[in-house]
Image (cartoon, rainbow, N blue to C red; front, side, top):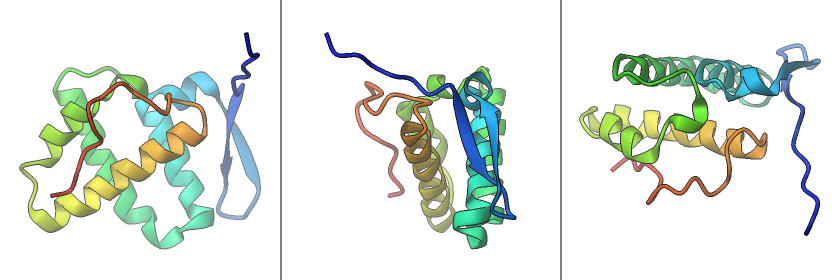
Length: 125
């Protein structure tokens, strides 16, 4: 049996280039993951911060209104696709990219498994 390591924390770049650490449990919350991901964008892609913050904030609000818990691993592709579908085409594309970036980041951080068992990722079209 191969040994497996799990991250103890998530490191997030601050706008000034320094790094801050958030706990792994906080990073797995939906709001914590959004906060950490958007925080990392300040350093890597600052021009996307406002748009991603808006898109992911609206997604989180819709998730909570639908009765979802503040736990990132529970947010499934089926729900995301249903949430994205009625949005106007341009907005749907931007929001789908924001969600895809969040999930890619979350997988890289070890917050969600790479194979979530969902049928397919949400699409913009």
